Image: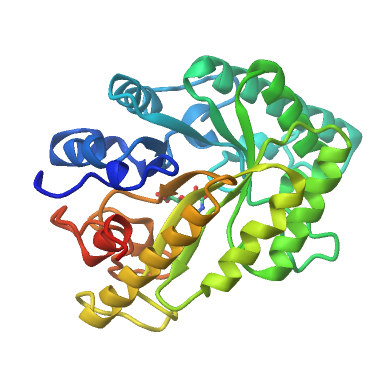
Amino acid sequence: QTDIPAVRDAVTAFPVGAAITGAEIVGDHGLLLQRHFSSVTPGNALKWDATEPSENTFSYAQADPLIAFAKSNGLAIRGHTLVWHNQTPAWVFTGADGQPMTATAEDKALLLARLENHIRNVAGHYGASIAVWDVVNEVIDENQSDGLRRSTWFTVAGLDYIRTAFRVAREVLPDAKLFINDYNTNVPAKRDKLYALVAQLRSEGVPIDGVGHQMHINVSWPTIAESEAMIQKFIPLGVEQQITEMDVSIYTSSGENFPTPPADRLLQQAYVYRDTFALFRKYAAEITSVTLWGLADDNTWLDTFPVTRKDAPLLFDTRLQAKSAYWGVVDPS
Ligand code: XIL
């Protein structure tokens, strides 16, 4: 379909991106990506298990082709992610004694040394070609009174893993925008814990430039008012905000399972995309980029999360044809 407007021409307030895997830079997927989007995020290729599968052995075999494609097509790149509790090899959290790390001074020093080495290598490998990084991902747990997720990162190193990650990333990449990224930031309890952490760390001088809202939502949740409150919450901090992983599931509970997407859900989805993008445009001074977590419905992580069932959360269908959701974004009238 080359007779329809490009998303990136219709939405000029900010770059619009898509998360991609290696298969999506070739053939019709590559053409769709080039035509409609102005930014990309490697969906898995820059995670720790891909880039440093064993200690101090770095591999860019997955990410390099994606980055080269982005550069040759003039696409911006969001680096995702330097520190996360998932998709991180077990060796990272194994002490010198071969045992799982615990809250000892020795384990903490080793863990932070591994973190620093990882960031120096991975961020250093791409240098200025990746100008925005999700430095830490999903560190908030609103069910903890201090709001901090009890990952091994935290139980071994406390908040110092976050401080170290941002400090080292800034040293390696003085001009990059450094983000803290999380999901469900539209939920007041979670949003407020994230706000408190960012406010505290910035007051200490930790170089956090931006807050990333993943925005994995569905056709009936959240309301636009809740999403607006999410954006407004962070304005006083003076940070950039980006929408980093948006998709709109057709499911409203984990018990549902449709063999094909129902027409009424696809229509609801179009309205959600229309109204949510209208909100982002209203806050174009704060929202500096919007990324969808996938290119088309033939490849979405929601097909296996939270349960295995076919989902259809993106702008293009399994045959790469524009959906009503696409028109919600492109022609919001
Ligand atoms: C997902 C990928 O899309 C999947 O391919 C992978 O199996 C699991 O991770 N939040 C994030 C992303 O920050 O890194 C996740 O990506 C989706 C949820």
